[in-house]
Image 1 (cartoon, rainbow, N blue to C red):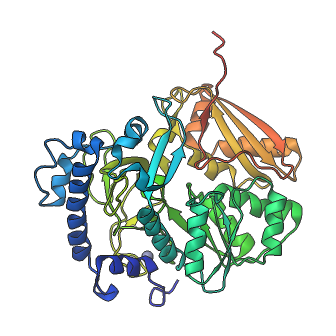
Image 2: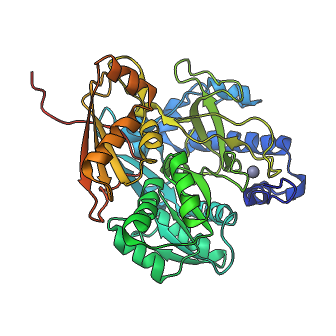
Image 3: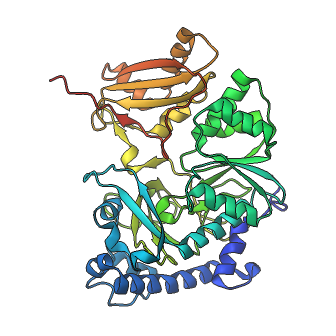
Length: 450
Ligand SMILES: [Zn+2]
């Protein structure tokens, strides 16, 4: 792509507005100065108003920050803290909370993780979505939203508000259960673009091509909530002739974290609302720029439930240097793994869902798949349940076994006779597996035979 004409990410304008300066004058120094002021304010706000932080920051919050290195003396927070003491994080009364989001009940305590937002916090998300979507949506575009949107304040609803503000036409749909039904809506509504999770959007594209015989031409697709395998990106570009954008966010970040630009080289981070760090997950030290580690985030403007040095569990790195689009906003490389998503094989090598995605999605006829292991700490058995169309069962199973061998850890373990692989082939009747926000290799919950 021509670097001279490439459009700068609209998030740069969003950040400049928020910082209160002209976009053309935005520099790294100004972002840093703004972030330092907001870090100090957030720490004081949290320490004064939240019982959790009052306790956690005793002895560290009294001394004012003078530089970013000072932040290193602050303790980390994580999902387990939110599960155990979610309400104690609050800096405002529960009456001021307009939305509570309840997430999975994984983790050692089995308790649910609940995040709380004030209406101003949600307005900030809409604002960010509006600028993020401006990278790929024009006035009048019809945009299908394949994200949960049943409740007020849910991601689909906030995104629809942002699209309305942009003068685009949102078409809320929700999570895909029936592929033919979703394709029918795409066709009937003559959509220009869509937003959804990678695996669901991929299933729509594959099914449309193989079974429904429907050809779509889309302008843009925004993939959100999960890792985007190269195989999915390539297939969407080829089948729908569209450009594929990626969004990074999690509920903890009020859903907005970053979005890539026309250069497609990492997510431009939401730096006016968050301060990001990358740490070594073992030593907890901040790593040099460009090195991989765990993404840690501190909210800069969150009122209801601020997060300070929150360990996201996502593994990534900052991409050094300036983006091809000319923006100064930092870029985060695509998340390739989650700390808790690494399945250790009995050979001590590990695999991730991303590895399996890259290996299995290119197999023609695969609509979707799920993966299970007998143990996430010393796996000796891997079971793939694939939803397929087209080819004969025998042929597709053979191709899936073959494709799995492209994952080095699997190939070596199988060759050493230390890993059994089982493929269960299910013909896809148009219904998808019940969806999860993030796909993961799960541990089989079978009764131990011993
Ligand atoms: Zn860019």
